[in-house]
Length: 231
Image (tube, rainbow, N blue to C red; front, side, top):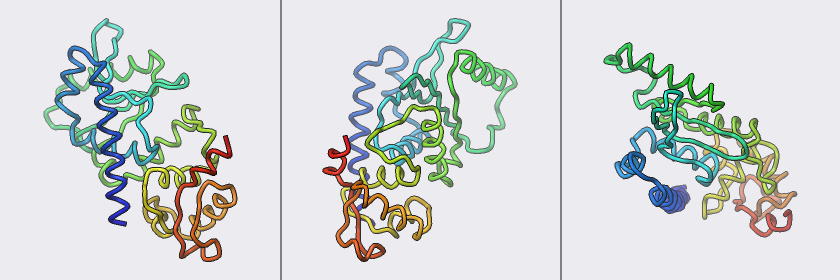
C-alpha cells in the first residue's frame, strides 16, 4: 500500500500543479495575489479530499471572485461551476469551534455573505478543519452525493452505483493494482461488499483481475480498454 500511496501522491501532485498554474495564468489583481500566497492548510486538506473523490480538478476554481449585492468584491474558497450548477465550498480553518475573537460585526458579515450567495442562486457546502482531518471519507462521500444529486457529475463511462463509482475512481487514480481488502480499507466499506461489487465491475469490464476464481486474493486495475468499448 505504501507504493500505491506514493504513486497516487505523484499523480495528485502533477494534477495539482497543472491546476494551480492554469488558474494563476488567468487570475488578475487580488485573486492572483491570493493564489500566489498559496492555499491554507485546511484548504489543501480539502483539495486532497476532492481529488480522492473525483480524481481530477475539472471545473473547480480556488479563491473565486464574486460580486455581492452591494457591488463589493468577495472571495469564496472554492467554486465548482459546471452543468448549470454553481457550488460555493467554504472551509472553516478553525475546526468545529468558532474563534473566540470573532466580533459581532464579523459574525453578521458572514451571515450576509452566506445569504447573498443563496439569493444569487449559489449552492453552499461548508467543511470544518476537524471534518477534513478526522472524517475524510465522509467529506468525499458528501461531495459525491451532492454533485451526483444535482446532476453536475454524470460521466457516462462510470457505473451508476455509488460504491462502484468510488471503486472505479480509486483505481483510475492509482498506478498499482489493489486487492479487495486494500480497496475496502481505503473506501471504508466491508471486504464482502467490495468483493461483491468487484464481481459486478469485472463482468461489466470496468476492472481487470489477475485471477477471477480467487477474487479475495487477486488484485485489480482500472480497465482502460473496457472503458473505450463502452463509449
